Image 1 (cartoon, rainbow, N blue to C red):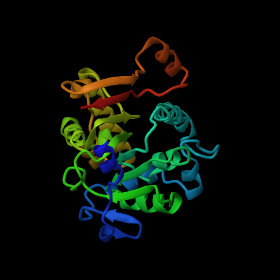
Image 2 (cartoon, rainbow, N blue to C red):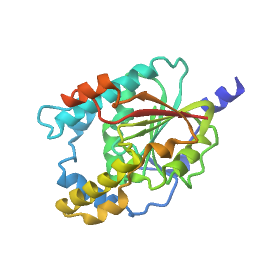
Image 3 (cartoon, helix red, strand yellow):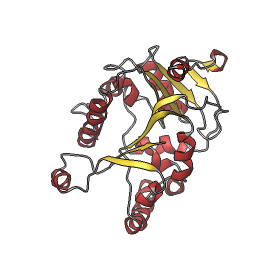
Length: 262
């Protein structure tokens, strides 16, 4: 009981608040500039109206077919979240523009903490999802001074590929979890060892074709072996026969949903 009260009282210091963002690390542009240029080239810079509707993309969205699959992932997680009765502290790692927590906040009264080092997208997220239950945090997850055991759920949605060492990331997040807390990895590719080698070459070719070959040094290919040694469970497996059939007709995600607990 005491622990639950402590978690519900988790607070951010208002002294770190600037223009709606809690700055818990010094801003650095080690990644944001090239990432945003790539997003622009890919037509992934969205209007406020489009962002407000994600993952349910408009007919004009150039990636609407991809978002149909991401909407399925979102709905799976939202249905899972309905099973949780308490008000939760949820930390979203690599939140970007905050669409995931923004959409969840329309159905749930949890406390959402959106963390990234992409200042531009977070500024848009504040503009679109400006509400008390959502906090945007600019921070390096490895150095930020969060209270231990502060979060009930930590989500990493389409973001593990931007972290070079997945085991280091998971170990860091586990100490931020409550005793019965959960990490959820979603909408990110996880490869076999052989697949990872081929995927690295595809990534290099792709970013070179876009004109940003340097991006290949910022995109990482994690394998199932990276989850060894962790208490993990696959909640959605695209490799199961029934899910393979759905993928053939592009009716569901190609990426797994993995839960990691202490």
